[in-house]
Image 1 (tube, rainbow, N blue to C red):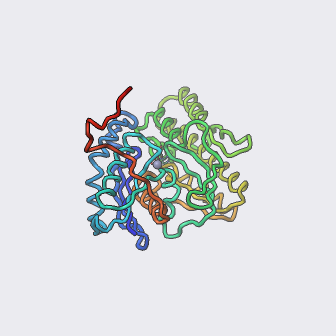
Image 2: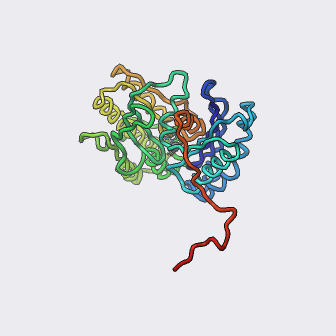
Image 3: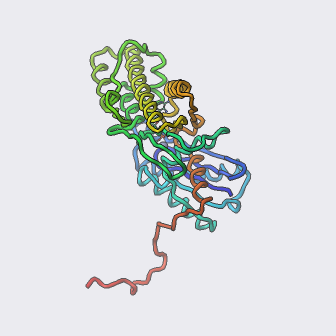
Length: 338
Ligand code: KG4
Ligand code: ZN
């Protein structure tokens, strides 16, 4: 079974072809970073228009890479949400349109399920049950996963998502969008002992997160400092340490509460090296395993959508065509108003 995956929920156009026996055959990604950089964040309308421009060229590219033709495709998976409405509509309309033309089923995939299943694309995929830490620009979730679609929320952010906190703090420090990776890079030069920010919500039970207070701690510290490169790096390091440490504490709790020892970490912030290291230490201490997607599949991509779509399409699930317009519509058929 060959599945085309289309991801257009935010600022990355991702296309991929996943084969049920041969695995991932091809994937291609276009990042809109350069397009949004001058605005300091994603401009939704620009994002939608760029998805319109890039989806079909990337589609041709993956067919070339995989050396297959549209005739070989058995199903289409596109990101249905959550995400920017205009951006989602582009992928959905193109995905549905292609599926209709090719006479194959299509399914709308949940973006966070895509992230959650991304480690399944690795040579040693995790088995269920497991605990998943899903940390992206829009979400911070801890989920107990007993199978595909068998998700129990254990914890979530009550304010900013982890990636959002990284991005806002980076902006405060004058770093360019997207802030997360830039802040992490800067933190490498920071002194880990100079500032210690709070570990939010670790002093009370539960696995929920809160990151907006950390952002405030960073603002207050930064305001009192000369804007030198070392000061900037020290604040970045304190911020990153606090986020990573907080997530480690919550993951420990989640693993203990569920008595599970398998952890999956995915989503853009899952690309953070310090987070990956600390969680590796945690599961080693608990005698478990941690699974990450390869770095390029931590952030948004088409491969995770193709994979998640395949699992559902292979189980016989699909969506009815939801975008309905009427190319033939008799004026006389309109119902009267009274
Ligand atoms: O999953 P993703 O690509 O898109 C969403 O679904 O939101 O995640 C993007 C988020 C951004 O907030 C970005 O700053 C953050 O992930 N991010 C990182 C790193 N790489 C990406 N945050 C911290 N450290 C990183 N290395
Ligand atoms: Zn994402």
